[in-house]
Length: 396
Image (tube, rainbow, N blue to C red; front, side):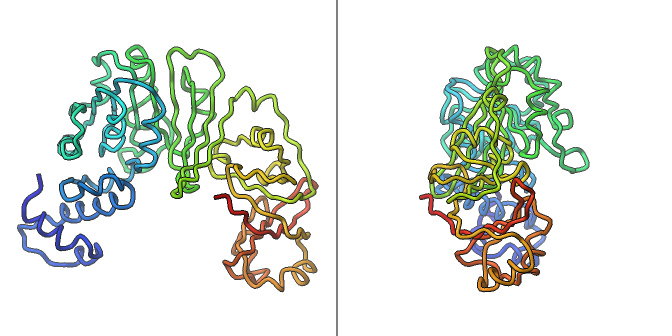
């Protein structure tokens, strides 16, 4: 699919910095943007798609924009595991990563993409990867959804940039317009799986979308990547289940699940007294805001409504976040800084619900970054500003 000249240049420059290609003069016959596109694609695959590395010399890669919205292998595998189905339509095929991993779980998959060049690339790559159960169709999602046959699940990952290239988060501003096409799609399938921006307001999704059965907040190494919404036409109850999943490179995945009904009937207990351990929720818990569920599940107390830190005398090694053993707690004032923080030369500092930023805190305390000491500068239930000095607990 690639010109032979480009293939030779890829092999020559594949291990060299992209800058060495950008500023190099090539003969006019060389399609330099295409060469850069392929070299950038190889780096993406090496970092995000390890199982495709075996085929890397045969794969063809699309433009940088397609990479920006593409799933990683970790999140694509997670999505593919959510439903037990036999057929799926991917209305927003793009680079084809999600389609490929869905195809490993279903008998039949239809890949829909409005850009013809992406269709050509995806078709080529599916053949290279041996994914023979995927039909590639070059058309608009809106057009195909009007005439598509019955299918077990429809997957939609709408483009989250408008015609000017600016990022958008509202469903009606995405392409395709999910709110416009959804009513008809729900007559042709049981399940709809939506991939939304991690910036999308969860409560807005609950209010605006019908038949929500599950919501998945997915992070990779504590970086929130995707908000997944599962619609089930057979699910008409107002309750839904939330799943907070933090996928770690070391396979130490953290997961917490709860229902919105449980959250509504549970109250959090706040405290100003630090116990033996401090618990810092991971980013999926913060995104979900499921603090009452966490407090109940792990029998922990919250330090302040806006601090999002918990404490307990019990060690809960499976807590979805980081755990620290408290060494000392001091009020944040000049005396404390002088008598306690001065012997500490460096520390890992986190501020939560505190009047200073991390850089301002470091300047005031003269603390360097790093070391084995951790300091949480925060506010507790009685509104006092404190420094919690602690050490990290290994959760492996």
